[in-house]
Image (cartoon, rainbow, N blue to C red):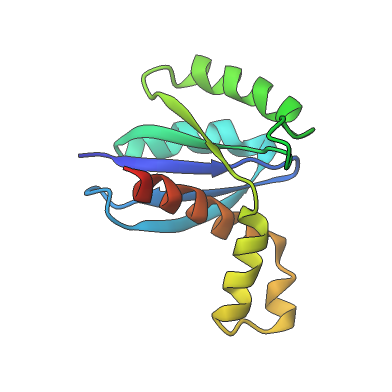
Length: 136
């Protein structure tokens, strides 16, 4: 089996999480500057076998697309063009940032550590990935 890689796309930073090769455990991998995301993914997929990209789909409470969807669509086109062999699935990412922040509180992180937005992005990607694994 190969890994599943989840992406919590952001205007400045993007959180990334991956599964183990058996697709049992979701773990935060890193946070990447969004402008460096495609090169990072190309390099990562040459070193590790990835069978699927999960990309968060930001939604409003009324189920309509969030404003940030306009930033994600061009990225998805680039990703499909640059790494066409790996399929992309979109996952509803409502509340993942709030859940990530609560996870940081629950795990005992100090207030100063919780201000680290890169950590929130990485945990959000992990939550997206974990919700996909639960749904399988």
